[in-house]
Image (cartoon, rainbow, N blue to C red; front, side, top):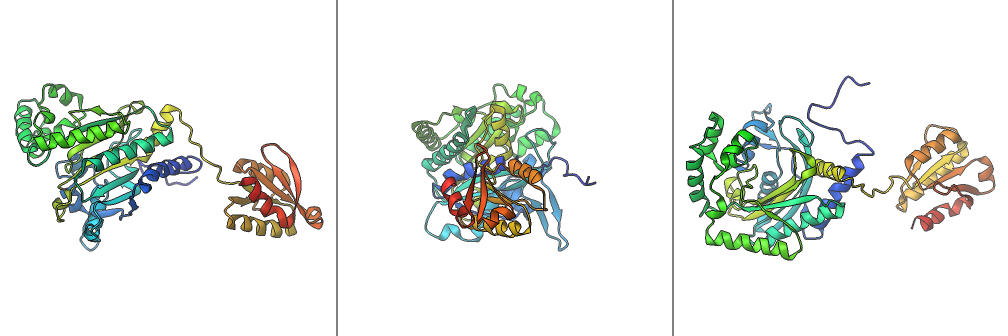
Length: 420
């Protein structure tokens, strides 16, 4: 037993459960790859200022949750708490927006880090798959991303999730709402930290999950009542496009989300089977983020879906993913000559794309067959000295128990035919 354990609030992905996480990542990525999104991977840490400017200095992520540190060279870095700012930074640095083909459509998958109080569904290290469409202001793009996320969840078999939708306005209409909201909030009984937030970014207060705050927000002005005509028209087109695609959603006028960079469309995917940590993913439009981090004006939209939260949602619904066995063929040699011959055959099987494993460690027939059964293999290939003297191996169907002799030189072709 090791004296070391995984750090508090983290988890290890180990077989067989890790196969579920891989399947979820693949399911989320599949519709993105089919829609023109290319894969991007960014460093696990970035300059602290990237997140302070982009995510927002008033957010809990930056003020309380970010893992920040100073390098030996004096650089201030932070483990990435979210993906959008990093992806946009990488796209700008590589001048992808100058290729002439906008929007730049990117997807990513990786680990993110926030110093939070650990509980089920909330970890200090977590996994997300995300998508960003950079450089175009088009309601169809917002709708596309929401539809693709819905498609991904449904392909996994999830049914009991809801899509919440709102508009946060833009730089024309949001300042008017901001002033009205500040006036309302300053009349409430709030603690000092929350009052400070009212001055910096009052919309953050709407996202406060504490019951003592939420009870006082009854009657707070709603942003939808302050939207300018352009934002109203934009949001209505997003709604119409999503509805026309057969995707159900709920209008949520209080939906803000926890990042400062969102403008206009904002959305969240929630699953009621997860308790307090009900959000399984979310996103929105962030038209001003590029300028916040020193780039040109690039209206953009994106989302991130939590892999671990999605797995929990699947478990809450009792959905069992159809995950193929990691091994199709298991070779069991009896004797040194059989060991040499079957190892060569396993290598051949792998070369033609058949998942094959081998009974390592010189186990006897009984122990090796137990391992073959545990591996989930459909077939076992068994050979001893007498079999090889006759030029055959024994092919056993692990489901039916049927065993047949197959020529040594024909076994690869036979398994290709049987496994398709």
